[in-house]
Image 1 (spheres, rainbow, N blue to C red):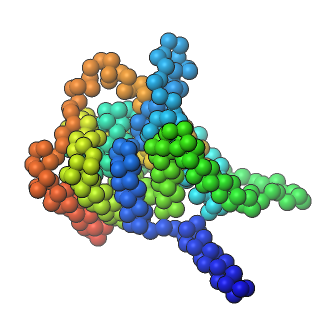
Image 2 (cartoon, helix red, strand yellow):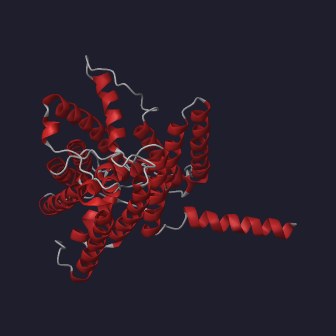
Image 3 (cartoon, one colour):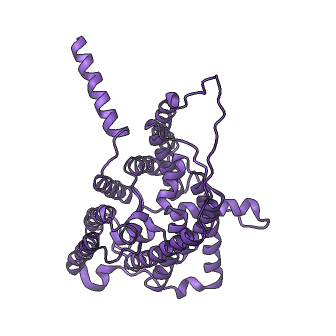
Length: 396
């Protein structure tokens, strides 16, 4: 009996180390994200993030500005908002379970960049009909033509954003000051000892929330929170970041994240084709991204913003959950700007001028869509690998 208990403890320790101590490979995270995104699609609607930010921004503006119309849906009943809550909580729980949670302040100039980046991402997401997730990843995965033009815009924006950061390094170098820690005879409290308890509590609370939602007839909402929890765990443990897929080819030439995102998209797209082609979900579901002008310009603006902020819509959430205070300011300005920008587009009629959703199979048929879809993503991988070897596109 004792040997069985010892073996059981050893297996638990090994599993714990694999999940919460070792960094997960990017390609594995990409596979997990594709599977979870497909589950979200089957469960309710395609995965998105900006809509949840906008819901938060609607409520912030409602309380700050007199005369604002009350938003129709509360954050805890809005599908994308609830998924975002889950992502944030999952990342925080993962950080605590890994003993990596820490309040991380930043220099003043970083907060300014975070605010500007949040404003640009909020405006860009409104123009493109989504962020790096809903406007690019999900759009490409569900065969919305706007996803490809946003992809191009994100690449151009990342190039411009990186140029701005290089200019900052050259002309606005930050001075670092050594901080002296006063000596003390008393031992400070070791936060790492109880981090894991809090992390486990968050995971348990997230699972409990699903059952609470189900008990009041909101099973779909509860499921979305649970899926968000899983995404937060996956992104934190792998340091999965869409920004790296667009930044690293120009910065270091590294193609690891390009391969991970492209692999994830291939899996997601193939699964999405099954779902749409067999009418499990309506073929045109989620196809509203303004092709081509809105997605292109929105992607460009968003790309600059995510470089300045140091995080996209998804990584802003999981890194905020890890304790990065700069990204919290980005999150707030993103939410408010996206809400205000969307209201402006609707009120002025500019939204109709940006373009409309185009479903690729409606234009070239399913038979041509699938090979072209895979060819585009494989070409992205090959271009990134070529650049990694030759560094032709590296601007450092």
